[in-house]
Image (cartoon, rainbow over all chains, first blue to last red; front, top):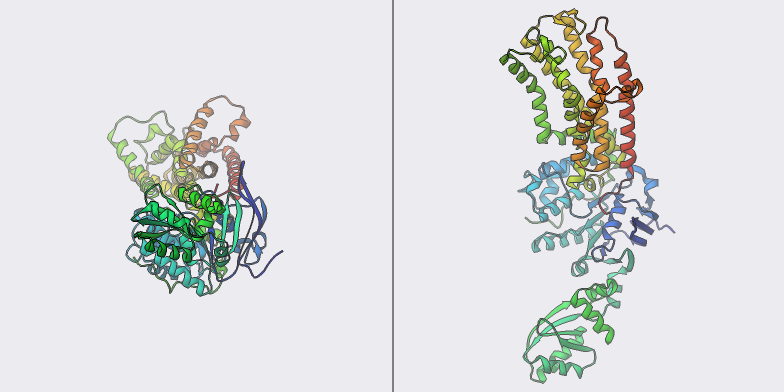
Length: 319
Length: 290
């Protein structure tokens, strides 16, 4: 069934590379004016799916519509209104950033060439526009990639790990820019393996795992399904603190290999636990969020083998 | 470096408005602009213009002549012999090198730099990109040939405008010799374009500039050796290297143009076959994610 209101409407998309199934009957839909996160561990199929959206990879099965049109229906105008990049943005190293944009604007036609200065300035590359791209850092190439995408005045912006290589300030600015663009009506698809980043800016998410959709829906629906967060706790008496946790429902504490305790508890149960520790004469020397609820769910969905994630998942299941 | 949160160009109209005119010509212009920024292209252009003059200078410094090359024995008596010696000496392998440097790299360079993803996500189809790049490679070959012909002719004229002895012993006056030099060099264009298409094919199939550039050069050298073998006439005519020698007929008395006409057919066949094969490979190629 086709929903003409959807910006992206992929149904049953399957792609094989030899014996490897990169995408396995993937359904992927994105509505207008949202920031949609595409999540998954390395090799989950995120880049293949984004490449298929751009027509870089042709699906072996399934249908793919952008703005209600298949590639066959749209012909050469398939990517009109679509901007972005897959994997790290790549440019001609022997040309300056500005000349690279000029080449791309030339391919786009229209008024794109007149937007180059503005895009370079917005991307924070004013001082480096005439520098050859071979001298750019990864973060600068990401910025240039965003500028190149925005030259197309897109209605759909597809970004693959756009924060890679950016400094913290750049990441903060990127989040702000994407939120603002979505507020102005742009649809953003953001691929990432960083749940915390996605949590901050996305309205909805699709989690891919081994080429299949493990979860798709709004972020608040995902939060409702999410397990308790994981905390790192340092106390004056760790053994006694573990004993205290055993008297409380909804709190599970255990020793961590790196010292201190790892605690599984919802925020209200954690507050109660900390109060009990104080009453028992145990000082809290440090407390920090280690794994957010969505990260925990992400690890469960994708069965990530990271130590913390495995511990978190296993312990949650024990409870 | 602050990345701005607002003020970005926003959606107005689909960029289809910019898809006026032929996309192939748009891509062709941009490819030529990119080529002009490449060091090796500038070096070739400089070489095409300078090398004939260096050859003239070198010949003037020595008393012996390259007697085993057509027109070689006349280099000290007529300037018209010089461009023909250069053509006879290096035509079969220098010209394939010349065109392969660009044609063998123009597709695979995008693989090398990882920029297919960048340009294929713009408003141009694969067909337009393929056509524009192919045309740019052919344009470079034609431009290089024109530059080489012009500089050869000028270098020869500076060395002397005396009549030159033709390949059958007849004396060719200066005016006619000028036309024959130009026609001889122009006759190299069909096989050069054949090698251009071959280099594009190798570049597309292998995704490697080493293969794209080195392959045609190696093939040209092998064909040059094969030419020496007593092959059946049909096989000889099918070789892409055979048309390089079609100009010999221009300098005979009476002149004969059969080899040139047969060469045109051969080159057109190679050009079309390599071009179609390249396109068939390119049009369904998976970019990146594999």
